[in-house]
Length: 67
Image (tube, rainbow, N blue to C red):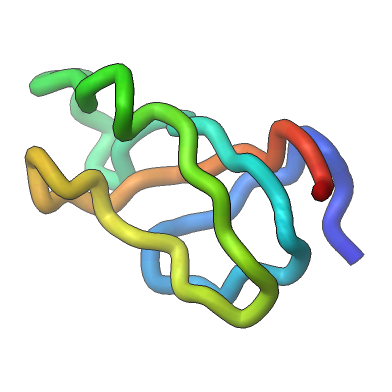
């Protein structure tokens, strides 16, 4: 079971249905910033964490809320 605040990387499997917020790129760059619509995603258990669509860059996602 995941906990709020736990961080996940693009390509890994989602452990819990919830809202996740963008928490940085995996290559440690800061630009270009994701769009406001891309900063929060909702994923179901078993889904794969996506890259940021507008940049096609890997990202870290932080669990903000368990649904």
